[in-house]
Length: 90
Image (cartoon, rainbow, N blue to C red):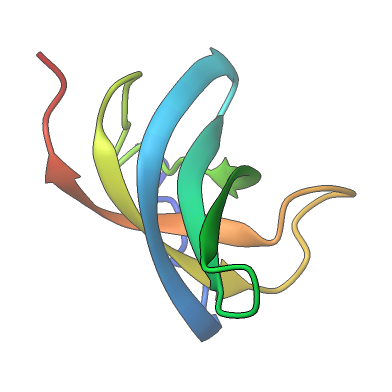
C-alpha cells in the first residue's frame, strides 16, 4: 500500500469552507472577508477562493469547514494544503 508523504507547512494558517471537490486531490476553499473603512464608516464584503491540496488521508468534501496551511508550490495555482477538518458537512 502506498503511503502518502506529508507536506511541510510554513507561513499562514487559514480557515474556510470547501465549495468544490471535483478535482483529484484538490479542493477550492472559500473565505468571507469583511473589512471596515473608518473614513466612510462602512464595511466592505468580499470573498477569497483558494485552491488547496486535499490529501487522501483527510479527504474533505463539499460543505466541510477546514483549516489550511501554506506550503511550497505544488502546481501553478496550488500552494496550500488541508491540515484538518473543523466541521463536517450536513
